[in-house]
Image 1 (cartoon, rainbow, N blue to C red):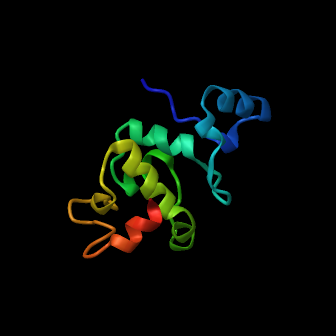
Image 2: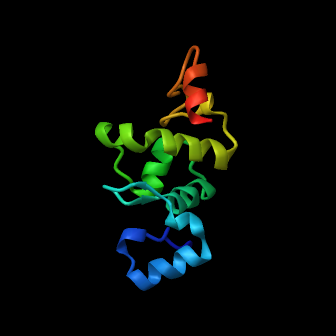
Length: 112
């Protein structure tokens, strides 16, 4: 049975320091309100999440519309980088649920 992804917000300060020392990505905060940590998101991707909803389910991160506007682009960037998926191919959940369509050059420039 696989271990759960460490929930940074549930750890003691000593456990947090130890985890960040082992993996500095657990020190990168993506969303302050949900305490979403880059290391947690990367761990979800390495466990097989290939869509934003997959990260949400694996990480149990609430992706409300308001929160998505704050940290959604960063999650797309991490998913693209870690899963080797071009940004224009990032999906929300199913087969044809792409976030971007048409000419996305300006969006890609912002993420670069």
